[in-house]
Amino acid sequence: MGSTSAKATNTSNLWSHLRNHHPGIYGTGQGKSESESQQGTMTPTQPTMHDMLEKQKKWPKSDNRSILMDKLITEMIFTDNQPFTLVSDVGFKRLMAAAEPRYALKNEKYYHTVKLYDVHHKVVEKIKALIQPENAGHSLSFTTDCWSGSTEPLMSLTCHFIDNEWTRKQVVLNTKAMHGSHSGEHIGETFLSMLDDWKISKDCVALVLRDIGANMVKGMRLAELPDFSCTAHSLQLVVNDGLSSQRAIIDVIAMLKRCATHFHHSILAKQRLRAIQKDLGLPEHNLVQAVPTRWNSTLQMLQRALEQKRALSIYAGEHGGFACPNSHQWDIVSNVVKTLIPKEEVTLEVSHNNSSASCIIPCLTVLKMLFQGEGPSTQDIRTLRQVMRESLVKRFSKLEETKIVVLACLLDPRYKNHVFSSDATLTKAKEWLKEDVTSQEEPAAAEEDISEEEQAAAEGTNEEDRRTTKRQWREQISCRANDRQA
Image (cartoon, rainbow, N blue to C red):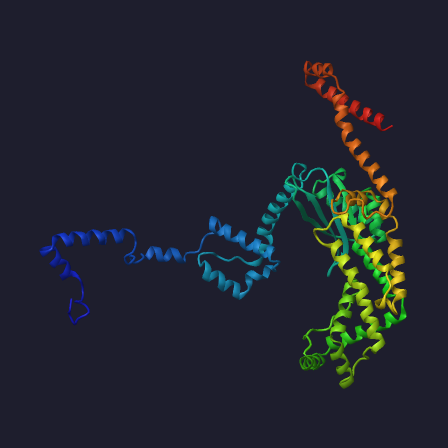
């Protein structure tokens, strides 16, 4: 206490003084010091050499902690859609070394071969449990499509159902490579093989949603599965029919495509356009290029061109490189945009992941009403609107003859029968409902027809006789159900 030497500066003399002259205070102080030590508030003890070595020792592969880390890294790669080469990246290695030095990071081959199978097997078993009749019922719907991948053509299969808690679910079951011709026979066989992989019976298939390609239509017919055409795909063809029906519209779209191409292929052109946008106070957006397989990309290209109309006109006058639309052509672009915006809203509505078949008839009814109107926004594009209206009627002429779509609309409390074009559709829908209810009641009624005497007789027989009797019961039920239908 008061010593000038750091080595001698301690509390030993003070504790000795308290022990000799103030024993009460000394006892209280000692008790408090022991209590703080037990609570861990005092300086921790120095770790031993064994503890230091344990902190740097790598976990063996069989260690549960190492197995858990392998599983989490593999799941992260799947969940975030990362490449397996991520585990070989320098930054990821540094992160893992700082987060858990005891974990031995494996090479990408280990995660790609060993852990991939384990995680995939667990996911498959979980999905199989989800689509079992105990959870998903006996009615499953599917969406499927074929497309050309970067290396090989592919076919997808997605399952949609409502579980026993009345929650809508969808799971991607398969994306399978297709080898050979994309004929209807091959598509049908591939689709059925994907169902077999998941042990799904054809009797459980309520509907298959597909595009309107002739090979897809033929494939589902050969597979003898209930199918329906994709409404969004049909709407795209309706719009394509309209855009290609009028020469003035074809010319202005081609002109704006060349304009977008000019800026996409030149960094200098983009920089000059950006400077003009700043001077005019316009949004500094890039131009959009239309994609043939997505009609709404044409609408987005026209909308962006209208937004940058002044900047494009100034750029074309100062630098050239493309022909800018004149005043009359800009009016056509504006009218086309006003016509196509409702079509985009309908397309997004029917293609949303939460949409259902009940919204198809109401959406198309609204479109037909919009096509019938005339006004300033229809000038110079009347041919486009007429062709689109005729194409819409032609492509969906049998829509109200499709049972599943009509019943979905009728049973939806938002629409009911308010959007049907005629009373005949409502009458037909009621007949369909009665048939469905009757078909559900017949098996139960047939089972009740079996007399108690027959059941008692079955109980008194041996196991083989019981099987024979049950087989006879099933035959009787089938015969009585057929008699009632006749």
